[in-house]
Length: 528
Figure 1 (spheres, rainbow, N blue to C red):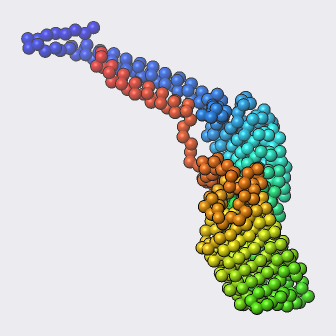
Figure 2 (figure 1 turned 120 degrees about the vertical axis):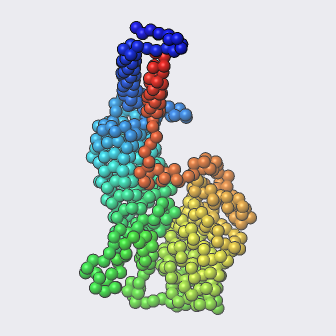
């Protein structure tokens, strides 16, 4: 007990011994309070952090009522059991998965989005999971930054609805022929950061919906024999490629460095595959003098030359003759068997006004083919086998007035295709299988501004709907046509994710109790 003694001056004092007892008692009370708070924090903290790892806290419904299970950054080594069969989005990114049990996803028949990136999966353990056969509704599959090396040709054969496939950041060194042939709806394909050196012929030819592909940061071999198929595909599909692939450490061997000519198939390190010199002419497969019995046919030997007009129509030509008259203003090469044209075919024809290449077998035209025909006003490319046109094809012909590309197999035109024309007045483009998707927005916008230029605008029919190119509905493209959302996330490892809801709640709970504890500890001496 402690009591007060009042002196004559009215001051209050404590006996020394009783004051010491009070201090000891107060100190013991403070220690007890601290111990109780620490015990409470420990029990509650363990309980909350344990619950944060439980499945029901990892699975939730999105604002759109989409069932999502997010196990990212969980440091798990195996797929959790009892995942709800209604789950549509499932993420295991940034974990330590190396083995997936057979049939781990077999009950997830509604799964549309599966992210297994940033783990340690190899092809054997991934194939055991049978994602191919057990997830028929899968639309997006991310296998980026794992340890895949050898891919089975049938690995994705049953994923017919897949439109997004990420294989980036693995050790893949070869693509089996036909591995993507069943993915008719695939729009995005990521193959960067692998060990690819070559691709088989036609590797991407059976993916009609492909919009974007990444091929950079591989080990492309850039000698003629091995790079030919990739070079050929890039020439026709450069607008689909995100970041141009580069040759990888391609140098001449010691036996090839003796003379400059013997090193014609070698190229310096880091040269763009698309920029390799000499392959354009190889692609054309132009008959040489040897294959033409040593005869170098000149234009006026096989064509009819009258004044400044050269008529080579219906001559059975398989290639463009050489040595045209330098003052030629009209050149007719229609109704022949020409399937490719050398980039140097029209050198010297700087006065040419009209060029007719219709009714041939052209499958592609090189971007610089009209580089020496700056005065060209009329160009006819109709009734060929063209599937696309280079974005800068018409750049050297600013005076072009009329263009015909009807009756080909063109699905879209690259953005800015008509941007260089100053006097353009006439376009015919019907009888093409126009693909009315988001890639057509710029062309449609141009058509609506130039309605008087399109001769056959009512006959520009969509191949994927019953509408015309002008009347098709493109509203969905306005908000979704943003490629950064596909390549900004997985091109480089993303930054660490923010705390989950449960982790954030746990931290908040502990912080609140620590403040409460400190407050009580400070108030106890005052109260006592």
